[in-house]
Image (tube, rainbow, N blue to C red):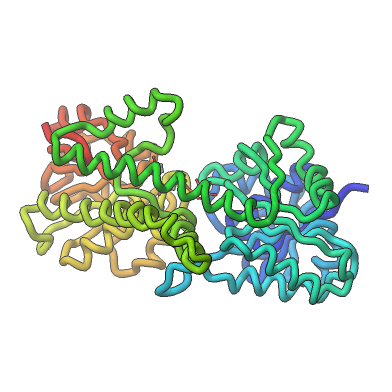
Length: 446
Ligand code: UDX
């Protein structure tokens, strides 16, 4: 008999995981405490922009014409507990307000709500990014609360999906990492992931702590790589070097690799910034804070990129933003996403607004979320309209749409032809040929 899978929490991670599990052939029940979200998902619609996700979801959601009907959603914990052989916990772990540590209340809440209903044997699988030690603590909690007692087990299975590539990353993961306490749990997870394993995804079996740490380590490494190249950008700017050329050259060394070496205004989003902070906080609790002091530097290099972009823009408009119109191209923290959580682009826009600049933002997908978070900024319906009357144009999220812009057309509506590329993604020659003063981060002026 085929396994029945539940997915608790239907945000980016959960919604994608639920759809992917249905695609792999399982009967899936997704749960969220937000009934509006459940209604939307049940109609085959996705509450965020993620390429390919809505198509994948509607291929399986029960009630959508032509679907397999393998995927359903509910708000009932009891229903989920009765239904599932395997329960994936995919709720988020945001940064605590005013602290580095992560807020475990959604994870803890999910376990407290689910466990008392677990009357039959099941495997609960945590996917959320958590401080090391959480899985051991939650396993003990399950043992206390679940009526099925020893029949209920815990595993930790960190998720490495990237927004914008969530479907691809979930169906064809680089690797599957599981932290388990028994062979039975490992066997069950091998069954769940049989298809990607067959297709070649490495399956790494570890203990709870190692599995939790793999995720912390991966995100720390990626953040460090970005901050490293951004530190080189600072030096390039001081010395008159070109960081794009430098990144290309060092990237040819296979030990270094060319990915994640794009200098610019740095990393943001709902994962990397808060994950490295939570990791530092947890290491501090464990008495290992010295081991991670470099992450403090990684974080400050990253935050410095945002202020540096603000300074470049201020200089470009003559030293003060007062009376100056600033066009901001990009609001999402990265292209192919509408996610504006800790978005470097919006942070820069907000700083300029606070310093008296008249900011107009345009983003292909992130406008609604940006408006909600920064209601006092100006918004335009297109890049052209954002640029109209602008004294400086900032390119802050590297959407393909922005690379295709016609600098000649934009030059006709801008008040001054000055563009700053915060992502090193525009073609300097194209813009300069159209008469623009073009500046990019970590690249020579001329
Ligand atoms: C990240 C991890 O990649 C993923 O494995 C983890 O599960 C969640 O966190 P995500 O936040 O979706 O994924 O985006 P990612 O593509 O990693 O980009 C993160 C940030 O770094 C973005 O703001 C991006 O613009 C920035 N970035 C990325 C750079 O500034 N330079 C680069 O070279 C690469």
